Image 1: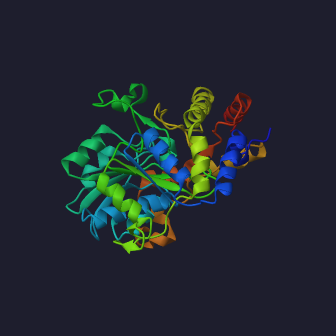
Image 2: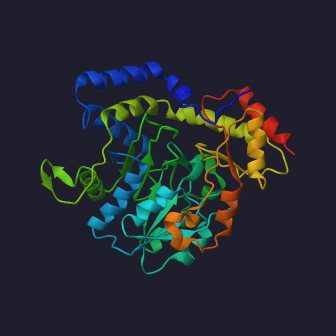
Image 3: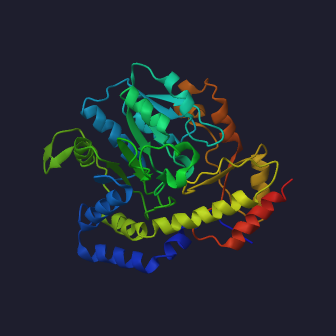
Length: 378
C-alpha cells in the first residue's frame, strides 16, 4: 500500500466541479481583486469563526505582521515591547514579531499537549510585555482560561496564530481544561483580541495559492489592518500609513468560499482517523500527545526517540510522513543570537516529532495499515 502524507489533488478533486465553476466565474467576470468573491468570503468566514470582521490578506505571515503593525499604529505597542510566544512554534509566528521591532519571549510548551505551557507564562511577564501570542499548533486549541485571566490581569493583548486550526472549537464536549468554562463553545480565531489565519494549500481550509486573513471584533483594529494591507490606504490615493500590498485575490476567495462549506465535515473525518490512531497505536517506542476533543488534527504528531529510523521504516512500507519541524526557531541561523539558549522540552519535541498521514481523503483501510505498521516497528 502506498500512502502519501497529503495529496492536494485528491482533496481538491472532492469538490473539483464546484471549484472549477467558481474559478471560471472569476475569469469571465474580468474582476480579479477586491471584488464580490472577496466580500463574500470575508463575510462567510467571519460568520464561521464568530467575529465581526474578517480582512483577507496575502498569506498567514502577513496576517500576523499586520496585526502587530496595526497595534503599533494605534500606539498600543511600541518598538522593544515584548510578546510571549511558544518556543516550539513555526518560524512565521516569531518572524511577525521581530519584523515589527518587537521582542519575542520564548516560553516552553507542555510535553503532554505540545502547546504553550500556561504554568510558565506569568514568570515571563515583565513591564514591557504587551501581548501573548498563542499558536494553535497541529490544529489543537492552545487557549486556556488561565491564559485568558493572565491577559486580563496584566492588560495584555491576546493574539491567536490560527494558521493550522481552521474550525477548532474551544470548550467542545467539556474537555478537561474547560470543565468550568465561563462561556460556551467558541471557535479558535474568536478567542482573543485578534487572530491570523493562513490558507496555504496544505491547510485544512486551503486555497490554490497563498492567502490569509485577520479576524477580530475590534472596529479600529479591523480598519487599520485593512488599510495597512492596501498600501496604507482606506481611500483611493490617500495614504494614512506606510502600508504594504497584501490582499487576497478573487480566485483564492472563490475557491475558499467553496471549500468552507465542507470544512466541518472534512474536520470530522480527520477526527475519525485520529481517533482510530489513538485507539489502535500501541507501541512502547511511540508516544502520542494527549488526546484533545478540541483538535481538528491539521497534523497528527507522534514522538519517537528513533524518529529518523521510524520514518525510514515507514517509508519502506509505503507510508509517507513529515517532520514538523526539524530545527526549533531558537536554533535557526536567522536567530543566531538565541542559539545559546537551552529549551529542553522544545528541543526534545523537534528531535522526536513525526507527523502521520491524517486527512479527509484517507480510507479506514489506510488508517488501519498505518497503525498496524507502527505497532510492528521494533
